[in-house]
Amino acid sequence: MQIPVEEIVIKRRIRQDLGDISKLMESLKAYGLMNPILINSSRELIAGRRRLEAAKRLGWKNIEAHIVDSGSEVNELEMEIDENLHRRNLSAVELADGMSRLEKLKNPGLFRKILHAISRFFRRIFGRRK
Image (cartoon, rainbow, N blue to C red):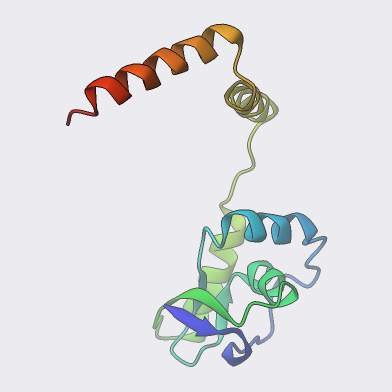
């Protein structure tokens, strides 16, 4: 659900230092918000402080949010901790593999270009069959 940014209430948060959010802002500009923020029915932020701040700095008027009624401040604090505690960054090997695959997709070799051209040719002639 889209919620006006100015209606979201930010209470006391665990994370005090938002860090550099410039890369997050670039991601929001390029791909949009991939993971909605989390708020309660009173529109108090539960999770997604950095995403919200990046959206504000980009001048967004609305942001996608999931509304949960956790029933208590304890549950909301547990959700905030849980969201930040259980994430895991990519390992160096995983990141290198992903970057290698991305490079190949962005800059295919001659053989791959020829295969794509042949594939496009036959799709135009015969059409896509489902």
